[in-house]
Image (cartoon, rainbow, N blue to C red; front, top):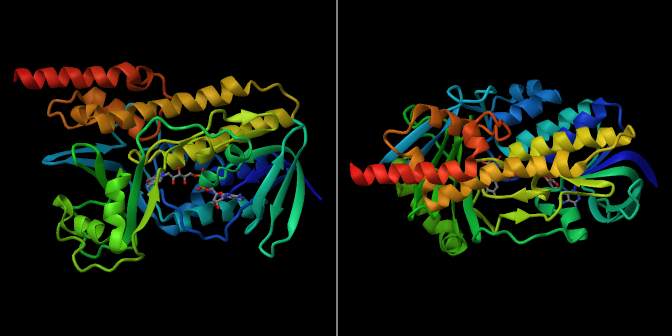
Length: 411
Ligand SMILES: Cc1cc2nc3c(=O)[nH]c(=O)nc-3n(C[C@H](O)[C@H](O)[C@H](O)COP(=O)(O)OP(=O)(O)OC[C@H]3O[C@@H](n4cnc5c(N)ncnc54)[C@H](O)[C@@H]3O)c2cc1C
C-alpha cells in the first residue's frame, strides 16, 4: 500500500503541469500513466496563453531546447477569402507566440521536466478503480505492465486522464454533448515543397458550406500535420481505403494544391469519431477533473492543450489550499470559472459552424479593434473580461455578423 498526498491520473499536459506545481509546494504527488512515453496524441497547435501556465511551472527552457516550430498567428481561408491573425496584434496583454508541436515529443518533455523537478511518475500503470467515498482519503487501484494490481491511498485525486476520462466513467459523470457528431481524419506528411509564402503558422480552410475544414500544421522538421474535420459520414468516406479520398483531397485542395504531390506519409491516415465530450460536474468530494476529463468542444480553435494546462494549474492550486486546511469553494473558483472560459470558445465554435464568426472574420471592413479582441480569444485569453468579445461573447458575435450581413446586402 502506497500513501501520497495527491494522486494524478494521466501524464499529458494537464497532469504534467498539475504535478509540477504541487511538487514545487513540497506536496507528495504520484502520477500514474497508462502508456509508455513518448506516445502519440493529436492536438499539435498550441495557443499563447498556455505559455503562461508552462512558464509558471518552469517548463519553458526545456521545451525551447527542442526547437519546435514557433507559431505567431493563424491563417483562415474560405473559398477566395483569406484572413490572418497575429498574436502580437491582440487586445489582451499576454504572450505573442507559442509552438506547433509533435505531441509525442512535447508531452514527453513536459513530464520529463516534472520528473527532473522531483515528481514521481509510474508509466504503464493503468488506473482501474477509485473509491472516493471518503472526502479525506481515496483508495485507487491500478495495474502495472506485468498485470500486477496495486493500491494507493491519497488525500486528493486530480483526474487528468484525457480521453481515458477515468473518473467521469467510474463516477457516471458523462453528459451528452449538444453539438452534432463530428470526427477527424489526419496524418503527418513530409512537406519538402513548403515555400516561404505558404508560411509556418497553422492554416485552417473551411469548405462544404462551413460544415468541414482542413488543417495544416507545419512542424520544424519539414513535416506537416494535415487533417479534415467534418461530420462522421464524410470522415468515414475520406478514411476508407487507407484514407484514399482524404489524401487526394489534401493533395488537390485550393491553397495546398501541388504542395503534397508525391510526398511521403510519416504515418497512414488515422481517424477519431465523436471527439466532443462533456462531464456534468467537474469536482466532487476528494477529487477534481481537469483537461479533457472536463469537456472537449472542438479542435477548430486549438483550445484543448491550453484548457488542459490552465485547468491542471488551477486544480493544483486549489488542491494545495485544501491540503493546507483552507475552505475551497470549488463550484465558484473552479467549475464556474472553467466553464466561463469554455463558453467563450463554445460561442466561437458554434459561430464557426453556423457561419456567424466566418462572416465577421472574412468581412472586408472588419473593425480593427474587433479583430484585436477576436485575436485574444484565438490566443486563449478567454478570461480577460476587459475584452468586450469575451465579456459579451454570446450576444456580440451573432449581432456583429448580422450587422455585416445587412451592410453587405445594402452595398
Ligand atoms: C482532431 C483533434 C485535433 C485537435 N487539435 C488540437 C490542437 O491543434 N491544439 C490543441 O490544443 N488541442 C487540440 N486537440 C485537443 C487535445 O488533443 C486535447 O485537448 C489535449 O490533448 C488534452 O490534454 P490532457 O492533458 O487533458 O489529456 P491527454 O493529453 O490525452 O493525456 C491524458 C493521459 O492520461 C492517460 N490515461 C488515460 N487513461 C488512463 C488510466 N486509466 N490510467 C492512467 N493513465 C491514463 C493517457 O494515456 C494520456 O497519456 C485536438 C483534438 C482532436 C480530437
